[in-house]
Amino acid sequence: MGENAAMAAELIRINLGCGRKYLDGWVNCDVVSTVRADRYFDLEKFPYPFEDGSATEILMDNVLEHLEDIPGTMTELHRILAPGGTVLIKVPYGKSDWALQDPTHKHYFTERSMDYFTVGHEYSFYSEARFECLEARLVADSTTLRHVMRNLIPFRSILRYFLFNLYDGVHFRLRKP
Ligand SMILES: C[S@@+](CC[C@H](N)C(=O)[O-])C[C@H]1O[C@@H](n2cnc3c(N)ncnc32)[C@H](O)[C@@H]1O
Image (cartoon, rainbow, N blue to C red):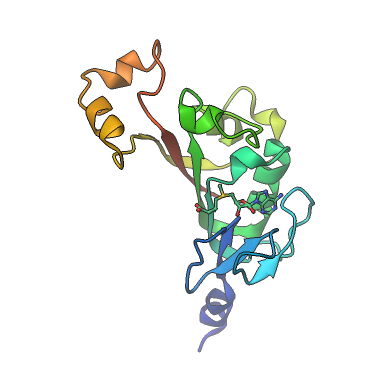
């Protein structure tokens, strides 16, 4: 095996705040010892126990909204990612019940929220992290009849500027250049 292949073999995928979604082949992390994880630590405390540039992929599935320091967290994700690595962040959409009903949520997001951590944004000085945004997508749930009926409403992508609960989540995929 060449040196480059050996280095690539050491790169990991990290599932931060895994909860009950333990993913095989990933390093699953949480702070709560009652869930199955590979590592237990507090995402509010920096640095996380990973080397610089050690991950090809990071997943934060409905976790970021629970954390206090968003710029600090984005800086830490950027540190851990290898160049070209990606992070998938799933959060509740700020204009939805999913975002507001949980009293432990500390932050609210729209599809523009990660612009603040991307190359060239006027307020990108919040953090030293600079990502490329590969995707910022509004997500509409369809697991209940109420959601299925809501999804029939036309012009939702425009109406969402004025109305509530037209989408439920936002998915961001960011790449470290
Ligand atoms: C809403 S759950 C999502 C769990 C899982 N990712 C999923 O999609 O089902 C949020 C998770 O983040 C974890 N979490 C919240 N604050 C945390 C912190 N400060 N450090 C580590 N994990 C944290 C919780 O323990 C919980 O497992």
